[in-house]
Image (cartoon, rainbow over all chains, first blue to last red; front, side, top):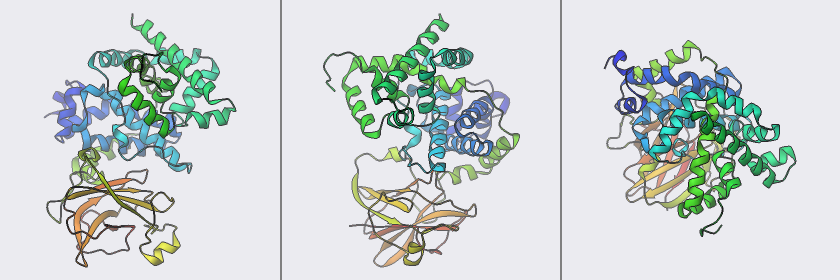
Length: 191
Length: 231
């Protein structure tokens, strides 16, 4: 397949080709998502070299396991970013000497969800980066802090509670309030 | 947590979506979710708020070199090999498989060896070669063998950094003879790896050594980094 043809395919159509080890399909896939993948890894790790290593390992993982993508689990982009996030957090923990929390099959921890939700999420992913930044920026600092520490820092709620010297319930409550606020703003942005 | 009708455990669900629960709590919540529609509905409603978080980060361009390196790996087939998937099978009939390929499993045994590849740090194990112990004592390599019928999966953790000219190779011992299990692999960056051995019949021990990339060896050329005795 020529790359120009692969460029016209949706991510979900590229995945079976990647599963068949089609390098053109993989190249198109990387060109579409390599930037956001690297940006996420860089946000978590804070070093270009480490972020590139994680991004490379994540994409190689996808190259070898592309056939494992299950559309019922969500969009390809969400799946891919989940892989990058897990590997980056794992690298972060290894670097800091913390025991890795993830299990062996770290690429498959994303939960399944139904097709209608997937459609909505895809729209959210592509349209709302700025809205999310805005929503995060508008969150009370105590809520954005716990969300950031958990998602981008890989810290558990008990670790965060220790860091901030607040009860566990308070940490989880702030997480919930923050996510609910983001979720509501996203829903409003779609209407 | 009751599975009767109840208010969704929103705080728990938020922490779960952010991967912030402790492992035991995660397992407990997942068991609850399996039987609670109210919580599942709440979870799915809230999930997009987490899914968009990676989209919110400031976009930074990776170097062109990353793309070149990646495509070079992919086009040369090295990417597949370095990832430990569908590898060559010098022993014949053996391969690595995804972990998910296993269904029912039976735990056999675990062993720990702290031999360092490429300048590692565990002096005692370098001398001793193999030291049987329970898994879960970092920084040494931990190994766990899980059998399923005639096959088995070897799980490794805390593997030291592997030089680029090396890969890991598995060996099995039968009737006092050590032969290649035909599985070559590169550990993940976090120091973990899994390897499937298709035929475990008569195997008394499984070992892993560092061997030359990309072809491995016909016989072990280094001390094992891990060895699992099969009971």
